Length: 338
Image 1 (cartoon, rainbow, N blue to C red):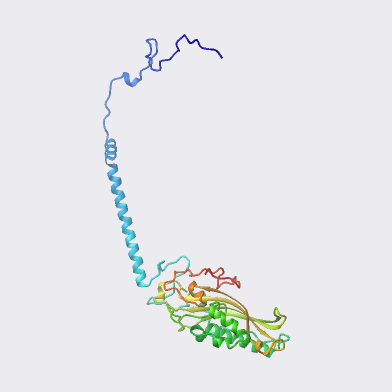
Image 2: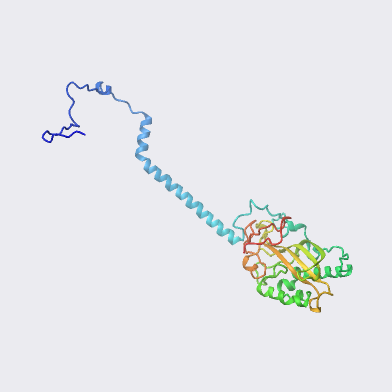
């Protein structure tokens, strides 16, 4: 490092010093020649006019677009209100998830089950077909036949009979073993009976429509086994789909099945051997039961009942089953989000 002489003034550089005569100053060519005039073309005039009026034009276009949007929204709102007034679905008749409903020449629905899997189901008790009764030791063929008949009677009383649908469970409970009745009566009080019995509020709107009957399809199987207490029992397993029709106004405006509530259940019934139990326990028991409900409101399901939304969404169940109630892949325990 070198030190500076404090007596000598600092050296400065003039950033703006004028170039000396010896500096080589270059002048652009356009400054050397004579000025020329360029004529204004039509394209130039259009560009100048656009620059002068662009703001006004853009503002006008924006206002026109806003008016169109307001008109579209107003018409959409009017159409929605009109559909609600006419009882039509908000999602329209066409749905990507459901085919159109079959109608007659006058545009009326051909029936609540037409166009759905339940169209081919049997009506009411005719859907409950029993297997041949054969001996299953220690149960004789007659005992098996009697047990199957009791189960069929219980299915009719619990899923099809108006006394259960609109009334009380007494007639159904009378078909069971005396010792089994108290617990099941509690189910009806607490609203946990839908696994094996169907109830409907008389004040439900729309109302349950029995004019076309209740459609059903299922199987009945049996085997001899022992329960958790070592008691010999005849176990009868029923797997059924029960389909109930509600009186939906103008059903032709909706997709097929909009007025249907479907229950898919599996119930295991036990009939203990009379030699293994006391008299009060002899008879039919509900050992286990599972159900999936489609197209009923959660409010009703929580009460152990079924109903239908006044205006159901086309092709969309009001609840969300985890398994297809009509499909072969349904498993006991598949339920709905309620």
